[in-house]
Length: 113
Image (cartoon, rainbow, N blue to C red):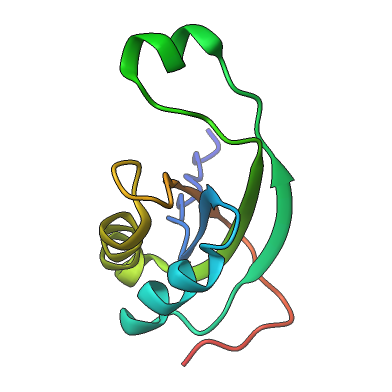
């Protein structure tokens, strides 16, 4: 009988934090993230699509011009960074931001201390 070899499932060591905010709030995202240990990020122009029913029901006006901020962080600081971003520019602020993270299983070209 052959021994079954179990492959160790490694947990991702990095996460990609994505913050989508109203135009002009990307630097506030980065300031909040840096205060929690993030080193930098990428800012891209984005355009949201609003839903008129959501605007009527919740009273939230969805502006089409957005900024997408992508920040790669170690998993250990992800929650603190996301919390700081949400506090600074979350959905209930003028930034009307949403923040989420995605696991990253491989990184090259960057050095993390």
